[in-house]
Length: 456
Image (cartoon, rainbow, N blue to C red; front, side, top):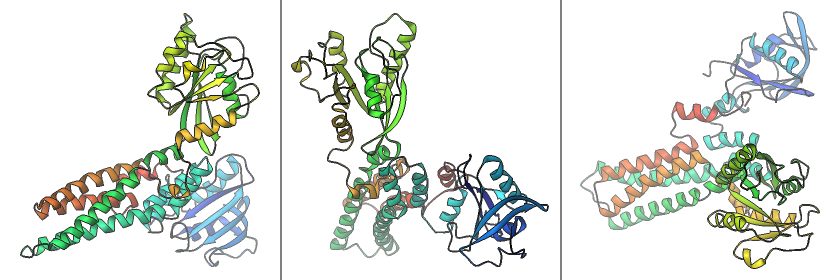
């Protein structure tokens, strides 16, 4: 694949002041010279240019000027892909950018596939697989927490721990295989004790990493919160308060919201997807029935439920039944309309976690935001947590590693044949190595990099 010189638009498509076309590969500079016309008029200008310099001129094809540009020259190996790279800074806009890219493709480059620039950086050894994934996480980050976690991973904090895990496993494997090669020499008791201690420490470390999987998932994709309750409890008004703008229609007519409304927001630097649902009630209206059904579906998919009660009215029998369903779900009981005289009996809800608010004047909204954050991370988010938050791919590999490691540890303690122990340790080391890319398959790499945008 490295024989090809690739090109792609590296900035978002659409109207803008500047767009960047990135070209990488052995012939990047010569491809650039075929389309770049410097103000000086020198031929082979880019091929003769020093690394990390910028040049002013025009993009031309068939003696026709297409755009006025600035071109950056970066020579291997001090580049993102460790190949020669040039980046054409042209005017933004769909047609202007496409015209420049088409000229580049007609001059010897081919269009890059999704993630190919980052894949080349990985295959050339500039970054490992966890760092490559961090590039995508940085691009997709929608909160400061997600960005901080991705930057820690790009800096190699997770890689350091994974490599240490693999090295510890390989150390034990080397001892076991040495005794397989020299069967007349038994493993000394103190050596055996040391190997078992090392494997137990590795197992404990794997468990620590696995415990971060849920936090990592929440930081990357956020949490889903369903806002539920009876009609006219103030669900839509609450949604508008949490968003900071009017998104849902608010009316004193019951049943105004007949469908689920989904909207994103940052709550205490956590990405939250709020789902405003239709009021939970019995109805003969077919449209409302479908809305209630969708409300129940949203409840099943939610990570957290905000159950909104009108505190100016007594608790109804059907509301009592609905509250019982919250017992096994993570929830917050929101007592709305505290700006009105209270009619709700506190004893009827004493077993629930409650927050009193007014969705009209905003009273209690900040306390509710604090409660939402604490329901996700009890005790707060510590900076060291962001260093090693694994994703679902890492989790799956670590689970496989843990299973084979447990088998090897049990066999080692039981004095079973070393061949079986070595096999399980090899499986463990390979599974751990998959995380950083030391043991990979083409299918695995294709699966990871296909999720990237074309210009990255």
